[in-house]
Length: 171
Length: 171
Image (tube, rainbow over all chains, first blue to last red; front, top):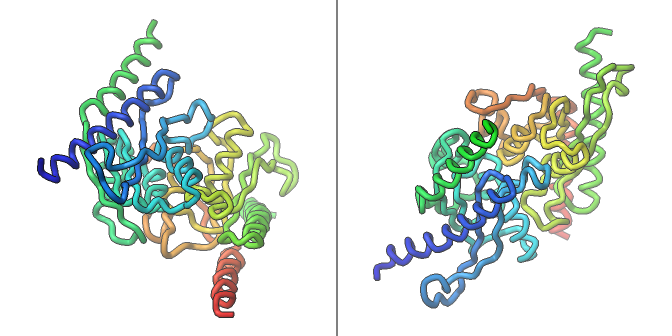
């Protein structure tokens, strides 16, 4: 298998896991966005085993009564505490929805190697949709960015959530 | 006294308090940035009593080993938990340094009425210095912004901190 295909399969594997986190969030009434942080192993073995899971999180804004409790921020806070290092060099963040500017700022501050994104957020996405991070040059760190991994299911879970919310309000 | 003068004196009073928080941060080796959140009283009395202090914080990035532990984020997290509401409507944030994009995102998410800023951050400030928040129109909330309150001491405390750091490295 080509290196690119392996990368794509690996990205889909971890994004699926981020999607499961999003689903858990939906179950407790949180807007379903999920995030997973992995760290590359120095000696990669086969596919999904070539990295270790560091932490995972879903949106907890309502649960924690905290507007900063987006999946990405929570995952970063847990990962840096777990690794006892505020630099997440060597790590990749998987997130089911394009980060907002707050989460983008947190991602830059945490020095990720790579960020893999599911659905685009046309209203608040800060990578490509509203703020154009990919066109800037002034930040002190630039992780590699991969857009559109499992874009459809990552978008679908949000659509379903808001559709259910509207239906429940009607009844 | 004119309304504008009262507002300026009030802003300087609370910014002075944010500066004291920044100083406390410096004492434990944190980059000295301080933040204070106040809530307006419905029936204003005299000057500094016309608002109540909700919370205050300084940078705790090193202490908490957390790249998101900027003074503004910590103050927002504490205030929303204390008020049991993730919307800080009616509140003003005082911060000694122009917020970065992460903190700007947190500020927008928390729905502040007003943000009062001390020194400008030419390298990472997202209000006016690098990202130009004041020129955007796409966000779902725009707090009133007041720049340059106690700009000199807010800038001075940072200069001194980094000067000491360099001197200590030399010896």
